[in-house]
Amino acid sequence: YYAVGLASRLPSARVIAFEMDPEGRAFLQQMADLNQVGDRLDIHGCCTIDSLRDALASAPSPVFLICDAEGAEAELLDPAQIPALH
Image (cartoon, rainbow, N blue to C red):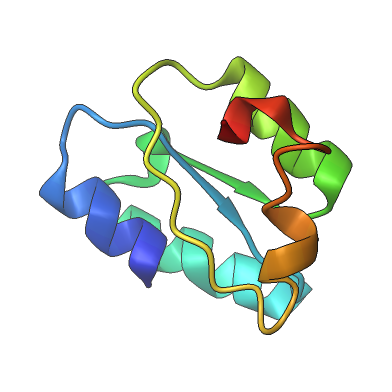
């Protein structure tokens, strides 16, 4: 719901979301479509260092990052692994 809420509040933003659970991704897309923000929301599967690095590399500036990775924040948010986090 963070992604849909963010897209709703920032109508010019492009939002990238990661959701590991396939059913969760389907619900997220459904919620985005019902709130008319589905065209500005890119939904990906598991967030890894590589997938986050790729997402940040292709994102237009400025970037605002919200992370709720259930304990994996220290691993994922490592500027040594993902230089765009600097």
